[in-house]
Image 1 (cartoon, rainbow, N blue to C red):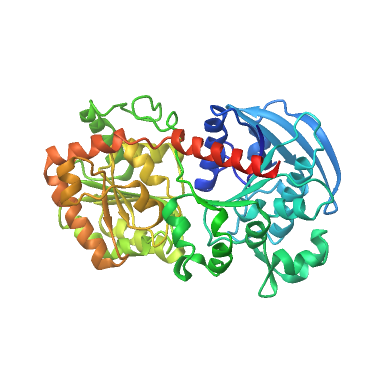
Image 2: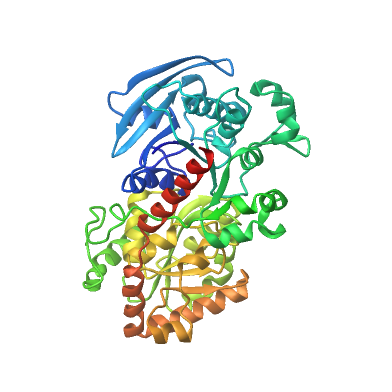
Length: 479
């Protein structure tokens, strides 16, 4: 089976979040099931710099009035199609935001052009690669099935994966004429209270919809989590699938991780001490035996990180420490930076994101905090399981699906892998921290939880097979 995947970011070339990890790992997992995937991505500067000797395979004379070149390349096991369009993608900022932190004003066009290119590839412009199915990710590529639907060509089966329904790609309705779609497509697919919604249009026109965990698939059917699209999602209920994400078990492997000062396994947990020492030094934390809590996240309301300053005394009063890596909402950044300045030696913070440092934090800290108000899947807690770092998570979405709470029954059965709490309030969070600290004080129990977590299959093995099966059903249905 040949599959075209279209994504706005792809690890290890360009990453702002979990979407890149999924888009980069899933094609490799699918290869074991006889699926050949080519991934179409924009030609950002980081992408163009990293790929070696790309081959020109097609020239677009006009993609929404933009000239572009399609390049083919292979990079770290991934087959790539790169849309080289410097006027849209050669920017000094990130994939979506300029250096001032604001959205590029032409994002509507940058990702409509990507989608239009994807639809033309699906229609067969590359004789050597005619896909059997198209898989698109989030709003940035959600127009692919729209262009496919309204093209005068045989329609290829399509699947859209919603990584986070909060991001919908909404733009002014006045931009519709520039998308080169027939007028009836506005009301049939794109219109959302007078604006354009790229994500809505992809949900309507795709043959199936998936989310990144079973619980999130249920949650987005409700007004609390559906972000205004719950009715539309419900209308696609028979075509809605929740498939939990996996992680790259080769990249995230503590026994062979070259980014760590001290590699270790479930049978050599004492070697984590070398990573702990390096973590203390990196964050300026006191070199004592107090449990180290870690935050590796975007610092946003969605992630629940505004609650951390409120519960910090619960950690510090028990002799614990806190290491923070992230950036996001300015008021959360300021509160956490203030806490670090006021509690030197007990709280350390690095602003931004650092892939190497995130590995060290998983390998050297004791507890990872993931208090998200909603979390489609979450990868941080999966990395933590792999590294023997106990996740303390909110009971929502993929966090609820992947972490087994350390209640009495789970502890007695020896299957607990972390601590869950609900609702996402400061009081519930405090109680969960106290419960986690009690567990940490029993080293036999704590070690059992670490080893159980490290045994968890958080790779793409199972989910890759599930996606391959879904692909096959969609292709068979379309024949």
